[in-house]
Image (cartoon, rainbow, N blue to C red; front, side, top):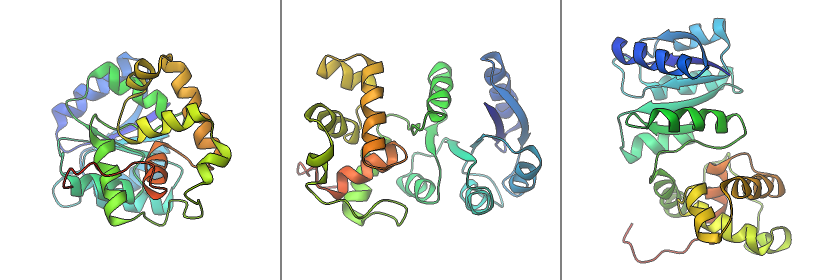
Amino acid sequence: MKLMLVDDHPLFLEGLQYLLETYGIKVLGVVNNGRDVLAKARILKPDIILMDIKMPGYSGIDALKLIKAEMPDIKIVMLTASEEDEDLFDAIKCGASGYLIKNTNAKVLVNMLYDLEKGEVPLSPGLAARLLREFRHNGLSDEFPRNLSRNHKNEQLTGRQIEVLEMVAKGSTYKEVGDSLGLTERTVKYHMGRIIELLHLENRAQVIAYAAQIGLIEDKGTGC
């Protein structure tokens, strides 16, 4: 795994680089502004970019759009202090592969990066539920499959897979799903992999969108 780090706070960048390299993750380089990200990515060709959103002059969202337009295979995870819904939705809709808050535990961050290589979407706790509400109320972006009928899930997924799908779409972690259904976390990950494969999706964000599209998750009168 080869990373590039982008943040306008030098001290944070230095600490993050040291942390990741302690866990054996190679950091190819760092950038301290959004303006220079694309040029640096062309040279370094990282697998993953961890990038802040709130940067002066050129935001992480601006840089995200440019990179995904030219190098769509690079996975970009927003690592930010912003918990604003607008930033979250814009990032995911513009192609971000995940969204993490800067108070994320170091070991959790590293595990999420390794899971990202397997096709999962790293999201800080509670963000999956916000995405679900956005997809349900404002529709899906063009990147998500639209040819799946409401009954399509019954034709391809097992009852257990539907249970897993519903809980993950509601924002439960794999561990929480496993504890609730009497499964190991590894088994839950296996079921999610099969769900993504059977429905021709790419990651957990698309699973959430799919669940919203087919009405698997119903409103509970939350007023959202």
